[in-house]
Image (cartoon, rainbow, N blue to C red; front, side, top):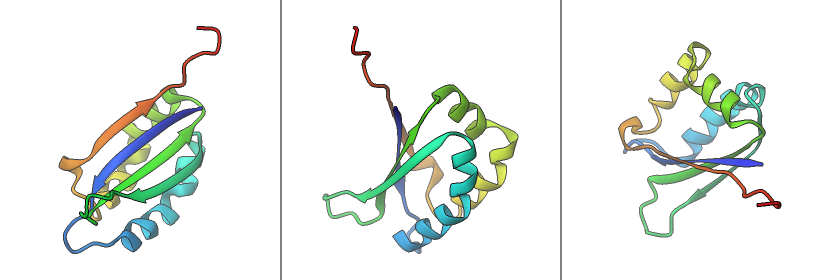
Length: 100
């Protein structure tokens, strides 16, 4: 499986619970895009505004197509109310083939 990890910076007035509320609303849509699981954690650096969100996805092409497509508009807009979009980073990890 492929993992897509988002490093989010919560807006100063927002808490992890606000992100969880956003995720509860949008998780069904993300599952339609191919997400199989999601995991959240905070950094140990002491900055509680940094929140990592990692999705396990079946097909990275489908995930990126849907995440960048018109159907993602409401999801992205509402996420922008919780996190600082200009500070978000994304890391995609693809497991090496066992036959490599």
